Image 1 (cartoon, rainbow, N blue to C red):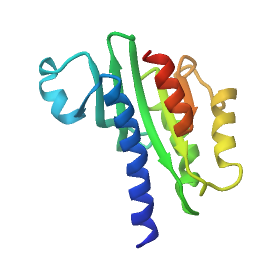
Image 2: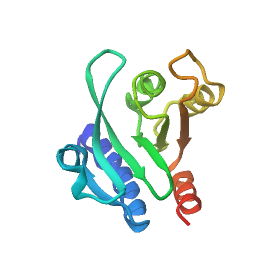
Image 3: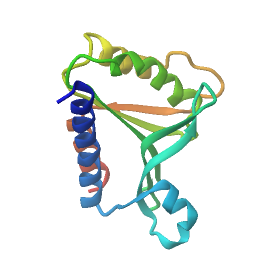
Image 4: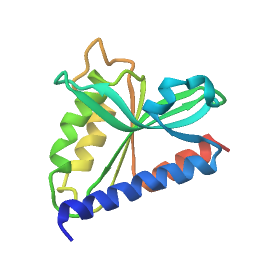
Length: 162
C-alpha cells in the first residue's frame, strides 16, 4: 500500500474516532454543505463535517469538523492531523497554526494531533506556539486554540459532556 494512502486511512480513523465519541455524546453528524441549505431541519447539538473557510492565502480551505452545541454553549472548529510515518504533515503545522489564528472565523479552535511519525519537535513546536500565542495581532488576541492528542480529546469530551 502506498504511504499516502496509508496516511489517509489512519487519518480517517482519527476522524472516525472523533465522530464516534461525539455521536455517543448525543451529537447529530452531517456534512456542512447539506446542513447549511436547511439548518432548521437539524437539532442544536451538531458535528458538521468538511467545513469551509478562506485560508490565509485567500483560497478555499476545509476543516474536518465544526462542533456546535447550544446546550454547552460551544462552537469549536476541529482540525485533525495524523502522522503515522515520516511525511510532510508536520511541515504544514505553521501554516495550520497561522490559519487558526488569522483565517478561521471561530473563536475556539481545536487541533487534534497524533501519531508517531511527526519530526522530533513538531508537536512540541505547535503546543508552544499555541501556549505562547506566537504571532499575535489584533485579529487573533481572543482566539482560543487547543491542541490535543486523541487520548486528551477523549478526556476533554468526557469532562465537557458529562
